[in-house]
Length: 256
Image 1: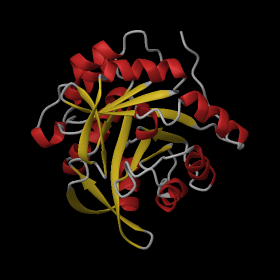
Image 2 (image 1 turned 180 degrees about the vertical axis):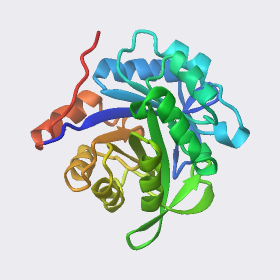
Image 3 (image 1 turned 45 degrees about the horizontal axis):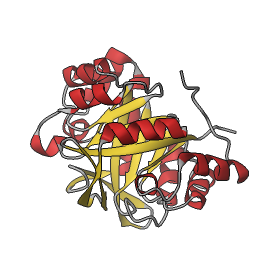
């Protein structure tokens, strides 16, 4: 049985860690570096940093923030938001990221997926997909932090992304994001059943039962969470203990 990774997701706006509902109504939580270090100490397997407005404003300013955040953190870190070129990806990887996630730029220029994959390896190229339900068992790809429609079918787009070189999928349900009502398990399973690369489920976790469900029924390889950690409803230690007791095998990176 596969081992599920527990990932803390940190959405960034400017210099602040923020959180919203359906990717809107963003609230400032605090310092990204402080929270990143806290989740590392709690035992997170990985961290995900997403600049939520970078694509909207055509910028990529995470490098300095990233360099401060990765001090004394020794687990894989994925960074996304505003990555429009191989040069942008290079700068972030040199600043401490292990993987880069692209969404808006990949839709505009699918060849960027291949360029990054060829330069750094598919394991560094994460395709970030923001999905909204548009009918029974049907989802559309959105960009610009869930604001812009693309007309792309989620399953077809992910298949294409993998063919172009994506080595992992960060799958966020805009409908469930920030609601604490659980993951869109049908969405995650539909993607997981057709992919040959790991799928990270994101959007909707409110309790450990939601994690157990998306791992068992949705076949998620990893679970990303934010609200439940930021507001201290659970710690990663609590989550891992309860998930293990419910038959979920967990993957853990040893701290240095």
